[in-house]
Image (tube, rainbow, N blue to C red):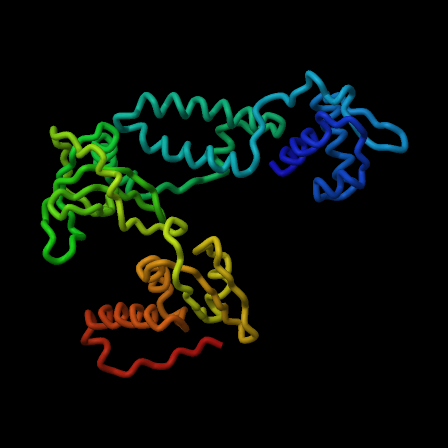
Amino acid sequence: MESLTRVVQLHDLLRGRRSPISVEQLQDQLACSRTTVQRTLTRLKDELHAPVEFVAGQGWQYVDGGKGYELPGFWLGTEDLAGLLVIDAILERLEGGVLQSQARLLRAQIDVLLGQAVIDEAVDATRVRERVSIVTPRFLTQRPEIFTLVCNATLHRKRLTFSDYARRRGEPENREVSPLRLFYFRDNWFLQAWCHATNASLIFALARLHHVAVSSRAAIAGAGTEVTGLRLVGEEPTRHRARLRFVPSAAAAVAGEHWHPEQVGQFATDGSYELIVPYAQTQDVLGHVLRHGANVVVESPKSLRRAVARALLRSLSLYPDLTTATPKRRSDG
């Protein structure tokens, strides 16, 4: 796929130029060696029949600027191919639901696109699917009926009723809501909806909904204009910075994680890894910190340190028979 991308880049460089471009310039533009440039030019000319010509002492160009010539097929970059495969994986899960026929038609179109994208690599869509695996959210495979009901209500502007087992103290067990939108975040599906019992915009994890039913009553028109409280990374201004220190044994793995577009990380001389992550609300980063357990220490700010400590103490309180003895100090050298 990298070679295909370079062919497309070379085609874009030559198309429409009024003067030849030297091999040295092509090396800079394509970020590759002289040999790779020559190989790509040969491929473009001999395999794809592009009107490439060499002008002595000047470089390479398309005859007449390449007018009338287009690369055969539908060419995709690496990111485009990955996106297609993600869509394909999700559509595969929907083939058993109300969108069964539409999902199959879309997957057939993806077959064509995949085949065209890799036509010069002698790899068909079936082989692409065999060699690249996209793991979709487990929710889609375990509870597709919930997703279908919520999706239908959201699209058709109908109210939903359900039981929410993640409700806060004092909130109703059974809710009636006007769906606003569905969104996919951190490997799970969520519903943003206007709750008629609390008169507030709330976010519900679909995996925690039970006894879901679509009401015959219409959802409140314009409820979406009152949406507040949605906290996704990048959608709310960051006001804090978490300074985290990871032990050496976890440093390499954490260094490859992406928490926030503006995160900054560096290795220390003792092998530990310091990560600075911007965040808006404590809950935005708390779960990420807790999942690393004893492999991370929050160095600042104090508010996040206290939140992590409280969460850990609550967890420890669930094991009174195991926490009476003083734990041995961990050695991580």
